[in-house]
Length: 314
Image (cartoon, rainbow, N blue to C red; front, side):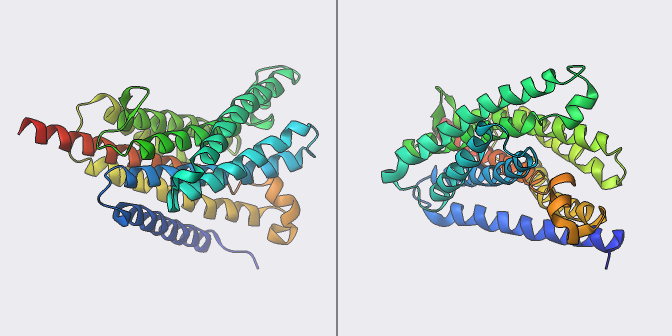
């Protein structure tokens, strides 16, 4: 039995709401875990972001490279590195044991390296096709955004490790405010993800009005994170936080709509072995959720920094 568009839309919205609540629970658990350590909540939230982004990359790369029959042995690399990053991110979010810090750092660094190399391979794949850099090759060649997301998951994980290691009220990254660095990273990564979503939704002719959501909501979140990067640290970011939570929910809602897209293909879910590969990618939308979590962690660090400075001047 085929699901109608209205029922599918309601189902996608419910799925997104449940996913948003789950992310909220994760955030609250991290906030209440150890209030004596100011940096624990942002660090655990950032670890969670790295893990969620790794899940998206792992599933997406596995499907895409399976479609390519794993022709190049290097196609196994992102599956291995993203699995390690998933485990390391989950471990950091739940435990963050100092004894496993070397393992987590190594896993995150591996993802950065594999992601950068994969980006080179995917760009080469686009240019080696007849015609070189054309819309057709961007639509149907190796997706450039996928290996970039793997590298970002590794960078986010390394940032989380550095923040948790310092255990300071105002942790730093590369000698700069950790909150500002994370805000810049999440803003840039959101912008890149929007470009990829716009490319593939344009390929789909934006046939569903909801296909406009990933190219309208996340760009605002990206701009808000850029603003948080350059402006004077503020004690609160209520509007930005609310927008990031909407962006996080959008990622899970997108999974529902992509699942509906799979059901509309010939054979629907009964032909899942083909439609999961050729239909809308189920693992792609949660990348928005992961990057929104990074942004939320950045805001927590920026607000802590602003609070500390206000106390010094008081």
